[in-house]
Each structure stands twice: as C-alpha cells, then as structure tokens.
View 1 (cartoon, helix red, strand yellow):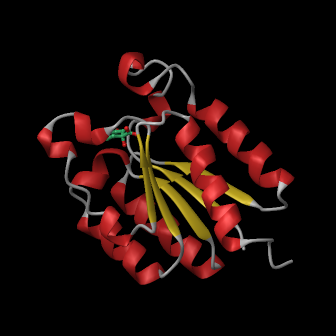
View 2 (view 1 turned 30 degrees about the horizontal axis):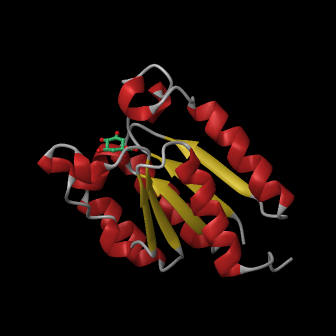
Amino acid sequence: RPIYVLNGPNLNLLGTRRPEVYGTTTLADIEAAVRARAGAAGWDVAFHQTNHEGVLVDLIQEARTAGAAIVINPAALTHYSIAVHDALEAAELPVVEVHLSNVHRREAFRHTSYVSLQADAVIAGAGAQGYELALDWLLRTLGEPAG
Ligand code: DQA
C-alpha cells in the first residue's frame, strides 16, 4: 500500500510565504523528510502539490485506485471544497489531515474543515513536523507494508 502525500494551493511557496506563520521549511524539504521516513519503513511515497481543486480530486481518485493511505494538507481548499470532501469520502482510505499552522488560533474562516469530516486524524500547528507525525501515526496504525 503506497502513501499519497497531497498538498493544496500555495504550498509550493513554503519557505518564503509568511514564514512567521508557516515556517522556513520548503516543500522540497518536507518531501525529503517524508521520503526518508516512509522509505526506511518500506513504504512507497507519491508526493504531490497542486494549486488546482480538480487536480487534487484526480489525485485522491488515483490514491483510491492504488488503495493508498493519504496524508493531505488541502490548504485553503480545506475550508470550502465539497469536491475534496466527496473525493475523500468515495476513496474510503485512511486519511490524516495536516496543517502547518494551528488553524484554530487564526481567522474564523479557517476554523471550519470539510476535510476533517473524512479524516481519521488531524494534526495542526506542529509546523513541517506535522507531516512526519502523520506518517508515524499511519505507520503505527497500518503496520508493515503488505509486500
Ligand atoms: C494551511 C492552513 C490553511 O488555512 C491555509 O489556507 C493554507 C495552509 C496550513 O498548512 O496551515 O494554505 O493548510
């Protein structure tokens, strides 16, 4: 079973985008850390970022076909995308929702998550480490890769 790590709009700007909120770690740094951790545990990783809602839906459908586990930071789409919600619902896969920032301590429009309705676990405010925590949780919950 592969692990799909999916990132939504503007996360390609990590490192330079509001570092006081999102940190100085780049998405490439996060990808390297994720690949190292999952690789050591014998899991294949598909890592993607897109600024487009429909592409994110396509990627979730691809994960569904692959029978993957999903780590997803849907970024702003978290707060309004019924299409992302429905894609996750249809996928019926293990899902961990990650946010770098603690969205609950921010603007009210960030307090609603359509994605949390479909997430098994939610990590917010742990910065880039959140992705590794999500992986650790999945690896412990799912056990060894099936082969
Ligand atoms: C985010 C939080 C969202 O509210 C925001 O739109 C993002 C990033 C985070 O990782 O903290 O783009 O998902």
